Amino acid sequence: MSKSTKKNSPIFEETLNIDNHNADDIAFDSLAEKAISRRQFLSASAVFGASAFVFGCSTYSTDKNSAKKYLDLAFTPVGASVSDTITVPVGFKWHTVASWGDPLWSKGVEFDQASRGTGASQELAFGDNNDGMALFTHKGRNILTVNNEYVNRSIFHGNRPEGAPINADDVRKSKAGHGVSVMEIMQKNGQWKIVKDSPYNRRITADTAMSLTGPVRGHELVKTSADPKGETALGTFNNCGNGETPWGTYLACEENFNGYFSSSDENYQTSAELKRYGVKNKDRGYKWASADERFDISKHPTEPNRFGYIVEIDPLNPNSTPKKRTAMGRFKHENAEVVVADNDHVVVYMGDDERGEFLYKFVSKNKYSKRGNNSDLLENGTIYVAKFADDGKGQWLALTPETTGMTIAEICVHTRIAGSKVGATTMDRPEWVAANPLKPEVCCALTNNKNRGVKPNAGGDETPLNGPNPRVENNYGQIVRWTEDKGDHTATTFSWDLFVTAGNPTVHKDAYAGSSNISEANIFNSPDGIKFDSYGRLWIQTDGKYTNKDDYANMGNNQMLLGNTQTGEIRRFMTGPKECEITGITWSADKKTMFVGIQHPGEKGNSHWPNGGNSVPRSSVVAISREDGGAIG
Ligand code: FEO
Ligand code: CA
Ligand code: CA
Ligand code: CA
Image (cartoon, rainbow, N blue to C red; front, top):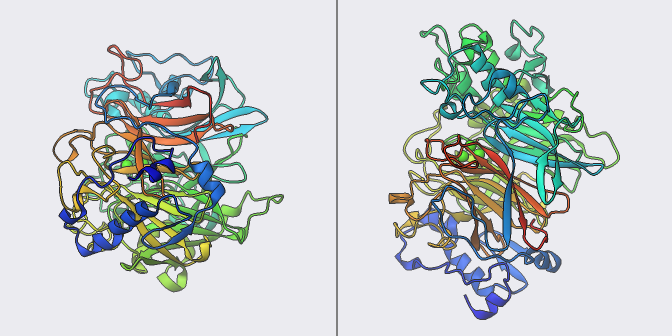
């Protein structure tokens, strides 16, 4: 990097050797070469500091003001780490805000290391495995709303000999360890803490009543013996990433809902539709059917059709009924990135996190109005699925009765099947989607896919190499980026390229070394949570392999990095404790605190974070800020 380049990029104080593996040594196949735009990154580096940056598919005029804002935060990257703690750059600090089992009410009890809680205590406490989250500020009060994706059975039930639930109270505790935690937090002496007994505090669990809205409401496919009208589902669980709307609601996205269902009849034949979603006669060890028959698919075969949606929650009204927004489809929802298009339709970008599944967007039928009632905008609209061409172009294909031969309700329940019917592009596990607030740029983390080029998805769609998914047995992942034509988020055509392909240049010299913006200084695998901040910078969180050897040598624990989508540069900002994933990100209204989630530390039994000693590891939300009190996002 030249001196003049460096002068223009104070965000990156030290020279990043982004081209330390020679492009000529790297035998990208033609798809990868086209997609990764190695040369274009090189040319982008060459013109860095000029007023326009040319990427593989799109030309962006750099807005001078946004560029100035963008460059506001400088830090020296942290090294990879295998320590059982968090590291952040010099000049930054962190503390824990909430950990699994922390009571939200004074009638609850503090987390008990020996029992790890009971059903009753967990119902009054922060759930396990925090994931996506958003902070809502209302009349000077701060309400943090957090997904509790799942429970780590071996830790959560670590008081049991097998580390597995053995009775009905263990199942009650497990159901309460899931869902969403809504809690007021407050800053005292520089530390954010839970405000116990706040009127905003609420636990939403796998048993909370919620309304089925949209096309699926009342349909045969969601009627059960307990709910013959098909209007009220109980609970939400495996809420992974999240979204938030401009009208102040929270979106919790139901992901791996299949793992909670089982069959008491081991010969039960699951339907092809349930198979597409991975519902089997065996659950993943939660044993919920042992205490709650609705999870027994041989007795209640339509119950799984009531999960896999996006749930809209009003965080400011603890008495409100959460709404399952079936119009946005049913799949293993990762997150929900909400954008109001220039024409005022609301667009929600959504990934389906499974090998060989699809990338979607929803466009609302009605328009957003600043002063109007927007509360049911997510109730009606059209779902589109992405089809990528290898030439850097792509199309959004509408899922309608005409294109699929299915009714609207069937499309909203069996969305994957509808996507297959129109020939959507099989993807390398679409995780979070993030839209840049400063320009019409959208990214999706494609975390990894060991089946790419090896076997079809669960619906039988072949998974050959394709433009945005250019590597067989892709263990490292990539981030695809696109711009809707004319910058219109409701457009049905777009241009795309790859912002980064993760890889390991210390081990590989081919396409698995990664794109030119990956070097030994910033290697990572399996990008998952991504979010643009108000400066238009892309925060990248990883949920990858942390063995730190072989293909993953020198990568250390999971981490969070900061990307500059104008230049392609990526810097490591943070490393997490052992065996964790970093997921979930939001900011305080003044942007002086960034909240980040640490999920499943010690999932294989090798962490005592955050309490140290011999303590039980606990998923937690941490607050990160600058020592000098400046803005961080
Ligand atoms: Fe819950 Fe796809 O991560
Ligand atoms: Ca995730
Ligand atoms: Ca993941
Ligand atoms: Ca996770």
